[in-house]
Length: 300
Image (cartoon, rainbow, N blue to C red; front, side, top):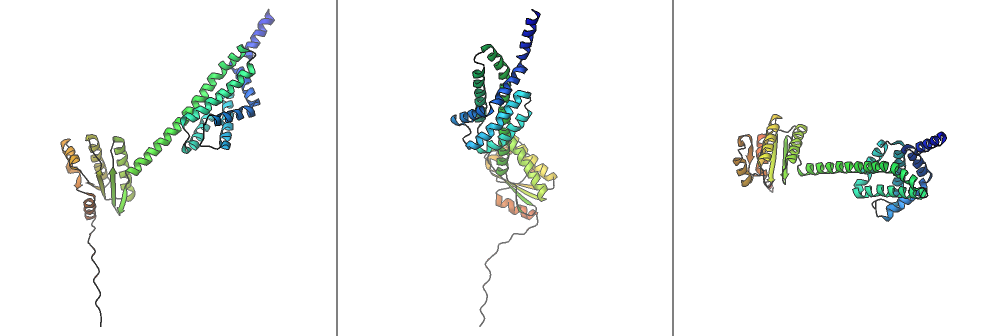
């Protein structure tokens, strides 16, 4: 009786989740070539990663497979997270979508699960225990890869948005100590803050004394944006630059008066050309028209 209980205890210990995972890892390594090729084939058949060549898909499949098995063996996802971020950096610019990445990970899970069904089909009870040990780890791997890809995609989107905002509010140097900031489109609070930061950086880097902010292309200004504009003027003044605002429409002017903006803090000129002329006057430049050169007298 004691020997039977001891044998049961040894069998139970051998079939613990840790022991089962070790056996699973050995199985996946032994059948690495076959399972990896099956997975790459399934990826192609499913129409995933079409932006990549077959060779590239197979190379990435190899690395992902090995990382997958390593996580099953060690329980650590750090290396997989690092690889997932690196992979995301390389394939996102090529147009690979989130559903494709999640799709290939789920396909790998399916390929491996099918191999387990085949291996343990004669012992359903053992198969269930193997799957109980495998599924939590597989779910963690899928979640790790998915989250890493989404985070990298969000980072790329933020960079693109920042680049677009910078292009939409360029700070231009037209001559020494004179900057122009033409603003086009709707100004939200985030863009207003970014605009002010760009303006102050431009003033500092160009040692500007006068800045012309042209808002001809701005359809509307509310109280929040008006206050941001006033703050930008004040901040520029603290850095030693005078701000001239041009392109005020009648509706925006009425809005500024209605919401009580202190217009004494803002130097305004009707249009951009007038603003540049006023800026040049403040900087001490003299603008004169160049006429035709006088004709040379003929000598006899």
